[in-house]
Image (cartoon, one colour):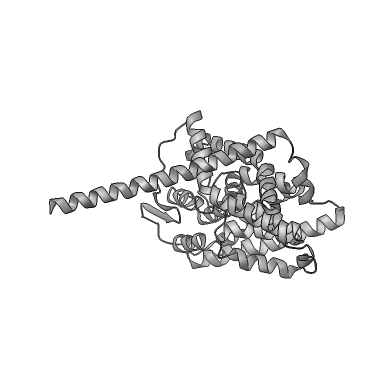
Length: 354
């Protein structure tokens, strides 16, 4: 019962910020001019690494969704460094993940996270640019990612409230729901059964950051879903800097991203990308821990957790988010049944024709 209560408290606390983040993400996705974004990233220069980082940071794309988008930009003429910078900044942070970070960890981490993501993206773009070996132009018309095969050409842009809601509480919620629930489950698990003393003895060491890197590289986890996991780590005694390393490297260094990056930008780009993301994440983590110690600022997840749990707006938001997730999984189940039924009918028709 304690575990279920902790899980619900985390969900309720995250819900209004998630709903707000999803809504803002939908507005950005529908109304941000894609052609303008693509026109800003064509040069192999420091300025375009910076532009790509700032353009990608607020966008509502996870580690999987960023791949076809980034490769679409590449096909339209984006430079290698701009593509790499975009591929780091976009999954590491976003309006939805920053909202949840503020809800679970407070303003300090909510500010530190996007700053660290942008710095990491710029460093990655520049290392790719400095180590770049010119390649022949790409001619492929398809890009492949863990989300499936998608055309690199952009579809006609749709604008309207319906499109915003469909993307926010349909596609984006569907892309993140399972990972978000997994993150909440892990955070509640840690909060319920892992004693603080388990991590306290080594929670602020660089060894913890190395462990976070090794754990995160084979994982696929989006920025939003990594947030409650990070909150659980902090509750267990891991330093905020080490948690920041996990939240930066987890979304940006999964195997799918690295595979596509190597295929499209070259082997040198993989090395430069990994060195930049991991090195910057550890550096920013160490800096955050030092700043917290020097200034006396606190990141009290427990205080954040209990601050609003009895508020009506949080409870209602938790119920709304739960219903949206239930709706998504029901629709998935119905579609799966329909596909099986359709396949069975086709097989039966084929048998009769023989």
